Length: 89
Image (cartoon, rainbow, N blue to C red; front, top):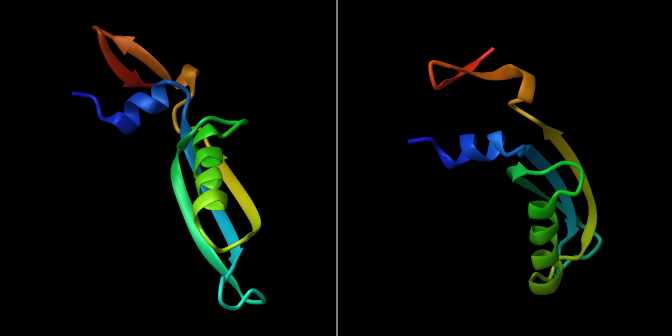
């Protein structure tokens, strides 16, 4: 059985990490860091956008900034089938 993470990589998803800086609700002058990591699609990042929409609608800490890093772990040219099995090339 193929893992969900591997299946998503085959669909074009890559590992995305977002460093989110936000203002503490009780002390708005202080910034806190939150690290978010998930498989997502570059360049529109629908999973990250969904998370940030949830954040702005449901959480009290106002967003300050979001820095995103993304890496496609499997590229189409690196994957081929040999005897009906996937092999990394």
